[in-house]
Every structure is written in structure tokens, then in C-alpha cells.
Image (cartoon, rainbow, N blue to C red):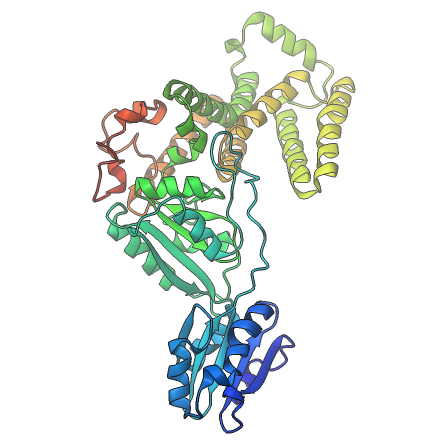
Length: 479
């Protein structure tokens, strides 16, 4: 007990108490816990009260027999762990357990009395649900695993739990369907988690950069979701999930570029509607990537491509503007990004006000003052709206980065610069892998009808097999 007190020295929330087992003055037990992360009511009713009742304790016995009797049901706690190592006791205390320490035999019993004061399950805020479930992940790991098990009620849903972080000891859980997920993917993920040697795991970024195949790439390589139903759908498809205690988000792998263009509501709509929306998202992706750069390249180097009436309209709108076309678009894109960051960082009422002021008042005033041309605002606004249609915010951020790079290439070399940079980015994407799956699949590789599979959603009765890219042992989804 002295070692435990020394480790938790200067910890005001560390509590310890000596009790007499069965009120027998000759048999003492030290009990300790961390206040705030344990439930005081459960600790008193389930642990302390049974231990001090002489009717349950029985005749005076030795410490070994006392431990066996407690493990056999002398207390009411549903979870008990027998510990003989000090590190295990410390880990249990920091994860919401109380420890009964038997100093005479240098052993301890740890009971889980974790506090239930956690955030309640609410509707998802980032991923809107139209026809699907209305619950979302919370910051408690065991609640999140329970939300997934409610949807996949099978013993084949496996859970491998480990701890990451030398200082934080954050609990992470790997979830997968046995016989559906590729075993080598599960083993590789577990190996990468065990190889992590960091002080603390307190954010998804601290984990993602260490386990993905291409950490230097701006494109996302893990699916982030706050919806348990989407998480379960991907597990059923053959992917491997990762949940982190303290983070209200689930991570899924392996992943391809095409997965970031899909939304959960596609599975709840007609296949024709979902196919049309998928094509629309890819059109928005191309618009967000190339529209500002194409306008600058054509206006600066290829004016002959513009119809005569449109060219005259652009010349008339720009004749009193003091800045070049390139400076206009760059300035408007930077202003658009600043407005977006301001609306995200400020509280909701203030953020909405800033967006309205920036979009309406400042934009209209800039046009009337002839600082920028109306066509520049139209181009930047159309490209910004196109980026907002992307389902993944991480993919939208990567697209905006490529958009700015494409604009610089267009300023430097026109359409030729755009073509060269597009080839470089395609090579970058084709060279990326995600746990053995090519990032640009099914377009690349030996998959038949790759482009059609990318854009067209088949009717559900025709989706009899899981994706071969995931290397699932059980490929058949339905009869």
C-alpha cells in the first residue's frame, strides 16, 4: 500500500481507507480509488457494505481465504480482477476501478465501479441522418462498443482491446467480424498499434499519422464516422474498425478514394437516385478542383477559348478593376477560406453573423467599389459550394489544398501547367495503399468495369458479394 500511495503522491483525488473485514479487528484490508472517476454509491453499496457485514464475512479467516471468499461472491460487484503486479493495480485505478489490497500476501482485487456520469447519446451533428438511426458515438469506449453490438448481434463480432500511450494509457479497441474481415488486416493493425511509442493518445490525429501507409499525403486514409450504424455497415462489408476511449468517433480501414465520396443515406434510397447523386458529387469534385484554375488559365493564356459575347462581358467587368485575374482569384479564395475558418471557430450565432457579413456585405461592397469583378466572385463561390458537397470534411480540406496548387500551376503555365500537376497528383494517388488495398481502386487494378462500379450503384438484390478488394474470406453477402 505504501508503494501505491507514493505513486499517487500529490494527487488530491486519490482516496484510501482501511476497513476491517467482517468488523474483525485482526483482519485489515486497504481499499483505494480515485475520486471522480468511480461511482461513490456503487463503491459504498457494492463493495464497502458487504465487506463490513459480519453475516456475509463469516468466521475470522486468513487473507488467502478472505480473497477467495470475496472472489466467490462476498461482494456485489459484477467485475473482479485478481492482481499480483503493481503496474496492473495502477492501471486499473486510473481506469475507474477500486483496489482491495492484501498487504500480507502482496496481492489485490480490483473491482470496476466506474462512474456513469458521461455525456448522453445524442443525434449526430456532423453526419446528418435522414432515414437512418439518430444516435451517435460518445466519449466512453464501452458505450460505443455496446452501440455497435446492438446492430451486430453475433458472437462473430470480435473485440481486441489494448492500451496506447506511456502517460495516458488510453484504451483502444479493434472491432471486426470474424470470418468476414481479412485476418492479415487485423494482424497488421494490431501490430502497428503495439508498435506505437507515444506519450499520450488524446486525438485521432495522434493515432492516424502513425498507422496509415502514407502519413505525408494530405488525402485522408481512414474513414471517420460518428454514426454507429455506418460503423456497423462497414464492419459487415469486411472492414476493420477502431474505437478510442475518450473520442466520440470511430475509425475504419482499409479505405479507398471512392469511399469518401459515398454517404450512408445512399443505402436508404433508390439505386437510380443514389447513382445520380454519386455522379453529381464527382462533378462537384472536378468543379472544386479545376474551376478557379481553369478560369485563370483561360483568361490569361487562352482567351480564344472564351465565346465572344462572354469575353466582351468579362472585359467590361474588369476594365476598372485594378488587380489582375490571378490576384483576384487568389485573394477571393483566401478570403473564402478565412470566412470558413471564422465560422467554424466562433460560436454558432457569431459564426453565422460573420458568414452573412462576409458573403453579402463585404462581397457586394467589393464589387461596387470595383476592387474585384463579379465573375471572380461567381467562380470562387461556385468552387466553394462544390467543395461543400463532398461528404468528408477531411477530403474537402485536401481538395482545397490541391485547388490552390492547381491555381498556382495555371498562373505559371496555363492549361499545360494544370495538365502536368493533374498527372502528378494522379500518380500520387495511384501510388498510395491502405493496408494492402490500392487507394484508387476500383478504377485501377484488375477490377472489371472499374469506372462503372465507381459511379453506378446496383440494386440491393444484385449486390450478392462483398468487394473483392477487401480480401474477405466470406465474400457472399446474401443468397
